[in-house]
Length: 111
Length: 115
Image (cartoon, rainbow over all chains, first blue to last red; front, side):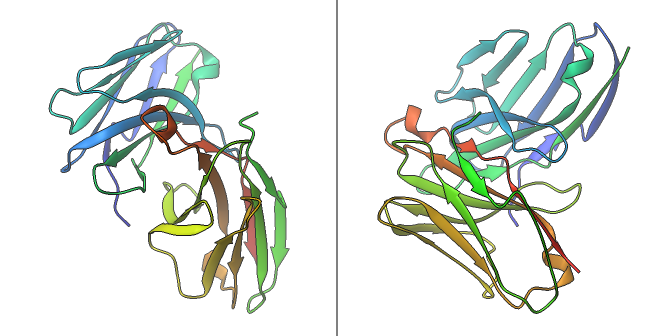
């Protein structure tokens, strides 16, 4: 199926470090969403972005809607052990109703 | 709690059988989406309904079908099950009106194991 290019695929970081991940698309999107999924559970919405250039924070998380509308970035500052999980981006482009999901970034935090 | 309810949480069935997964969207949400997630894989879009009508279709097999009822709950029917159908099936919902309505919220998922 169609998917976004999300990177990195996985990350091992030390507690307290900052984390950056991104998603890119060949299509122009009008919505970007970022989710976190714990094993065996449903994805939980972290941040929603609706305009190019938009920068939105949720606690230690900050996400941006790229100016080209073909990419988005998620940053986590001062990571803690409970940040462990899989982070997915999702996007929706004009003329379609369905969301496409990235392949996920698996984050592991070493205490 | 996202407000999206899925049942059953876990289901084990034999190959060739048929199962129905049920989803109740968040109160006020008109759109329901179904996604499939196999082990260590991403989320594959199956199908979307809006206010009872099919709106978008993804890589949904012909053995699978879905519908959305007048009370807006949705069912995903999986028939002639194969081992490869074992996966987590997620339902998500959204208001789908205006920018804020573009946000989708996921249920906890139904874990299907075909043996």
